[in-house]
Image (tube, rainbow, N blue to C red):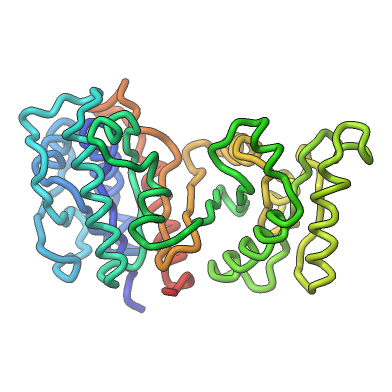
Length: 333
């Protein structure tokens, strides 16, 4: 079977993105499972290669079709949009923010046109993006716009645990207000559909509770009684394979043991804390519901260590691995 081609936008040139890309692609095992194609700046990759002393060749190519998938060679679509000699690592820079967005824009176009099979992204810096006057707060919003997707679904995976999120970047107060029956029902359907797209046959989804002990029948909060339980019950009546609410202090442990194929977390940190406590570096974010799959490291640009050669590539390697694993199963809408 042909190996999937994974597009890897380099991220903010002033952050650790270029370093973790070079380090991940110095590891020969990545080439066993995919053909990686970096979208970035060859001069920055060469500079980082020399800083860390990696024994790899940086090879500019014109299209993904030219990628050889050869260990020891990093194939890069060279955007040549930043001067490596003027680059200062660890500093907010509008030029770096503009370059990072251009890598993403190019990658999204390649995915849209079928040149690559999935995308594995590296960190961007929100301040640099803002300084470049790019009107998106993060990767998800960028890819949603570039792929014409209204509301992509975010899923975290660590080991065999998969976690979805009813809401993302909201205050805790606003997130609690967002726990509504109709929204939960919509997300149950979307989560189950996403698990099927990822190759899970007849998945079982658990819906997490919001309050301590599921609210103890209204003693500690009414959301389980008024919103979550009715949503789950109606979905079960419709023939969906879902259960809950399962108390938040146990649902993730049970999922990790294999009792559930996925968990719908009620708010951002509920699921983030659970997954990252299991293994911070190997918790990978997946954006689902677009015409193509996107995976991502779940950490930032780490400006405090950028350019020092000490960044860990573990999360990058895992993001590429999951992109390669799921790309043949995910298909194209």
